[in-house]
Image 1 (cartoon, rainbow, N blue to C red):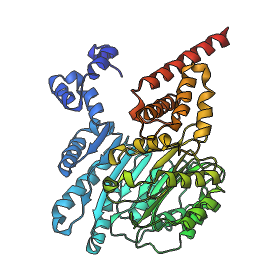
Image 2: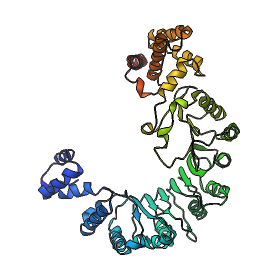
Image 3: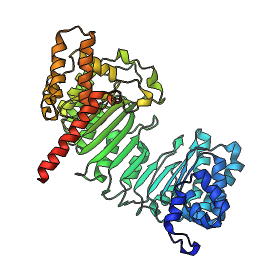
Image 4: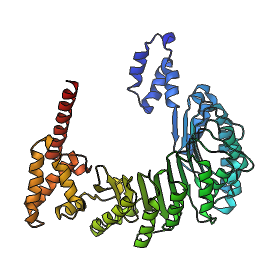
Length: 480
């Protein structure tokens, strides 16, 4: 940043801007023209516009101020633009403003825009707004999230940017039109991520004549209107993805999807992360053991799979709030998790329908946890109860693992011995519960499990400090 013409050292300018927020930086612009250029670049670098009125004001500014337009690197519409024929006049002016301004954003890297059309009679209107991308080209565009009807104009927009795009997310919000990329041919040498609904994804991969060398992540959503054979899409994807390169896959589709998992295991044995979200299901749909066995057989082919998430796709993110943790059979679920992990030894994270996520941080010790803590009750009490009742299946191996850490101090043996001695006591005995909690705290310090409830336990801190001291001693001995 050249500040010599203002006679301000660069470090002073940097120091001043470290104390500013988006609100105060505007005042800084008004106070001094010296900082106006720098502040404009900061303000317009990343734009996340939450209301149509904000979009209008911001785009008018960028239309008048070339510096603001050139400063924009990331543009996200955090609101859906609802296409309603009754508001055609206002929407027409709105979209014309976008069409005028977009060509000025010459340094844009990321764009996200959502145009929703909910009814059959609004589809044509939604398709007609594609002119906003008709003349613009962003030389540095890397990520495009265009949630709007796919039209020939949008297909050509993607064609113009195929040499720079790394991530593409497509799919209309609302009624589906009939998407097609034909007769355009894409290459996308740097594309590593693709999101889209099933019919759109099929058309996309059929329009790519060669392999996508950088492809790492695919997410496909099956809508209720998409009734073609899913194998057709999986085969098209297989032909365009690198054979040996690890890949992450996410699918949203109705049913338990054991047939989809089987097909994926055959076509993508190199899959590293597999997420299957079962739509149109609820908590009353019971997962049969036969289905679980079939999935386990499929996972045997996935030698590189580390994360397998198989869950019910709840449209309401609060749906689990009514889920009663007390009715959860942790022993049965752990048995099912171990069935899958025995079939696929590379797994470190796993989840099955109606259950929570399980992690394996150390050896063969599977631990339940919640990735979305804000929406779930804690599983920690259930895990403590399982260990306290001595029903945790790998408990003997866990105790051996802890005893092998004797170099951390004698307290390790003392905790384990105390836990063993209290086995004859009643389950509800305070002394037995205390011994269990000490064992749990030591497990937290050894990173066997990562429950936040144990972070402040004195024994957890003692183990952590003992590990640090041991590592320092080993470093000194190595250097000597």
